[in-house]
Amino acid sequence: MDTTRLDVFALDPVTLRWINSELTVAMDWYDRCVVGLRLTPVSTKSVDAASVLYQAFRPRPARFDWPAHAVWPEHGIPRSVLMDTTAIERPGAASPAVVPETIVVDHGKIYVSEHLTSVCQRMGISIQPARLRTGRDKGPVERFFRTLREDLLQALPGYKGPDVHSRGVNPEGDAFFFLDELEAIIREWVATVYHHRPHSSLLDPHLPKLRMSPAMMFEHGVARAGYIEVPRDPDLGYEFLKTEWRTIQHYGVEIDGRRYNGPILKLKENEDSPYGKANGRWPFQVDPDDITRVYLRAPDPHEPDSRPRWHTLRWEHAPSLDMPLSEDALQFARKLAKAKYAYPDDKIAVADLLERWNVGLGQTLPERRMALRLSREQAAIELPEETQEPTISALPSVARVLAAAAPSSEELVPVVEEPVAEIGDDDSEDELDEDFYADALEDV
Image 1 (tube, helix red, strand yellow):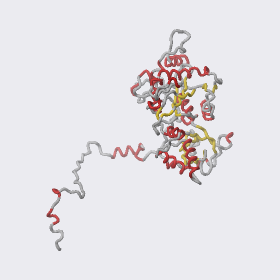
Image 2 (cartoon, rainbow, N blue to C red):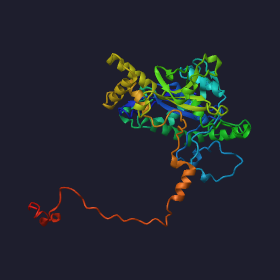
Image 3 (tube, helix red, strand yellow):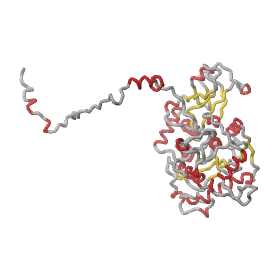
Image 4 (cartoon, helix red, strand yellow):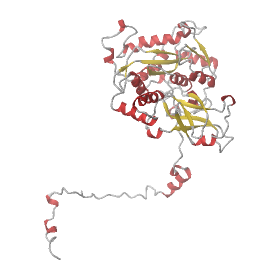
């Protein structure tokens, strides 16, 4: 895994100005397949590195307009069942699914952070740091960055080059790809071109003259080592979020000055934490890009023998927001409110920040980065949708009764509505009846 700054500009959808971007990549060392990537504005955070690692377990779906050779088979389909591939609605995966045993990283703060190390500990992945100032320890991914620049980025508008001699006349004025569009272009190039181009370093010792592509090398590895069993837990995304250890109080739980509460905390308030070395604290999963909610895994108190499931706890000011709010944005809003008010709170701080952005005052570089992360259509880690109580009419038994009581299509008689005359004061002369008001003033 590694992160690099791209030599091409992207557009900020908030201010419509150019912005630098960084690409984080996870590559399988055996076959050189890119199993995860994420494009972010400067600077990259630990949650971005964790999301790239999550893509190794959960590949992003491929686009429907991709060619057939660029689509990988959907992982998780049983091998002993024969089925028609046209019956599958999803087009397939954009990259192969792998289970990393070891990741090689440099000494960047996002790779040595507690967030990523705790994720690797939970998933059983060991971390091997590269040697200082030794680029060959991450040789394949460094070579990928060069190939990406020479084969794709330099052909895009807004390319600025690695130095001043490679810059164009006005690369800032040529940039018109948004950050999400630029990431989609890179994903498509990796899937359609890079994975199917022969590499000089990919070969079989028994056939030294045969140059294989990453896709061929992946098939070669599966034929030798067998199938790769990737966990299909739908709640796997929670394991890649940041863990905060907190105690449960009577008002809920407090994380960085934010209070969260939910029905599960009322049942766990007087219960001891099952984690003996945590001094009574419970682990809460936090998404830095959306702090309006946190997650706690605990068994259902009404079913003690059931499997622990994830419970959502909402921020006390979340009902006033209809959008995600990042951790950086809240800290910046608190800083502005502290300089403006004598006794600020989070509700006033967030309201002022949103008003500031709506009137177009978010012109500073930190504000542009925070707004850009919030404007992304796709979250860093895809979490399952929250389960809601079904409506009464959606219950199977009620649906059958309603279906039986509903009239059949043969009994339905179309009703033709007669045109209704317009009612108002603007009547035409033809619609006025002069004789109607003739005796209106006569004495009765």
